[in-house]
Length: 384
Ligand SMILES: Cc1ncc(COP(=O)(O)O)c(C=O)c1O
Image (cartoon, rainbow, N blue to C red; front, side):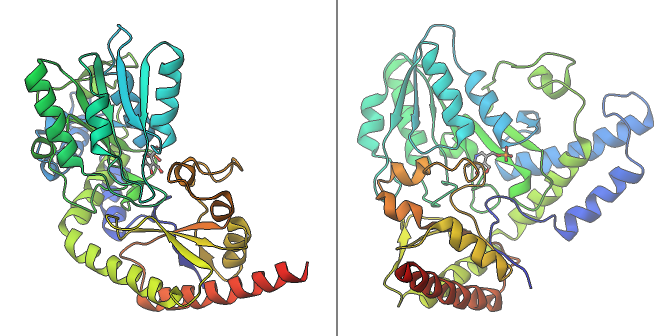
C-alpha cells in the first residue's frame, strides 16, 4: 500500500501529460530554433504550451519565459529586476529559499531589504507593507501560497496598493509573486491582480521536474542573467527543454480545466482528515483560513515530526516535515519560526499535501494510522 500525501514537494506525472510528451520523445525531437520541418514541429509543440499557459494567466504568449523551474524563475525575477543603485527590496520572512537566499545575498551587496513579518496565521500586515514602500523601492516579492502552511496572501489587494503607490509617486515599483503552490489550483489574472512578474513550476501540477516559467505582465521585462542565443526573447537563452515545456502545457491545461472539480475534492479530503483527528488534543493545526485546501500543517505534541514521518512511511504513507527543500538540513523551519510557533511544536510538525488523485478511503486510512502511530510514539516517550 502506498498513500502519497506529499504533493507540495512534487506530484506524479499524469496520464494526459504522459500521452502529450510521447510525440515529442518519438518524432518531434528537432531543435525549435532549426529552420527545417523538424524544428518547426518542435517549435509548434512548444508554442501550444506557451499559449495554454499565457491564456490561463491572461497575458500574451510572448510574456511566458520558460526556465528550469520555480527556483530559476524566482532568481530571474529578482536579479533581472533590480537596478544598479542600491535601492529597497521588500519581501516576507517566510518566502521559499529561492527568494530568501537571493534577497540575503543582495542585502550583503548593499540593497536595503525589508523582510515583512507574518502573523500566527501566516498573513502579512498590509499597513507594514504600505509603510515599507518608499520612492527607492525597486521590487516587492511576496508569495501567493506558502509551501509549508498553505496560507494565502491578499495578492489582488497588494497589487492594487503598489499600482496606486506608483501612480501617486511616479515610481516603478515592480510586484513579483511566487505562485508555485498556487498555479493551476486557484484562478490568477496577472493584469487584473496588478502582478508584474509571476513564477510557476510544472512538477507541482503533474508535469515534469525541471521546467518552470516566469510570466511577465505586458510592458514589463527582466534583464537576462545568462547569455547565449536568442531563445525566450534573449531573456533566458539556451536550447529549450521541449519535452518539459510540452508536459508543462498539458499539465497546465488539465489543472486549469479541472480546477473547480479538483479544489472541491481536495477540500473534502482536508475536511475529512481534520474531522478524524479532531478528538486528539495533542494534534494542532498550524495556520488557518485564508488557506489553500491543498496543504495542511499539523503539530503532534510530544513527538518529533521526523520520527512520525518515518513511522508513517513504514505504513506506506508519505508526508513531509516542513518543505522538501529544507527537510534535509536539520534546522528549524524558517516558516514555522516566522509564524512564531514554539520550538516544541515546530519539532512535532508534519506537512500533509493533497491532490485530486487522493481518495477519501486513503485519507481515512492515513488518519487512523496517524492516530495509532501517534499514540504508540507517545507511550514509548513516556516509558523513557
Ligand atoms: C513556493 C515555492 N517556490 C519555489 C519553489 C521552487 O520550485 P522548483 O522546485 O521548480 O525549483 C518551490 C518548490 O518547492 C515552492 O514551493
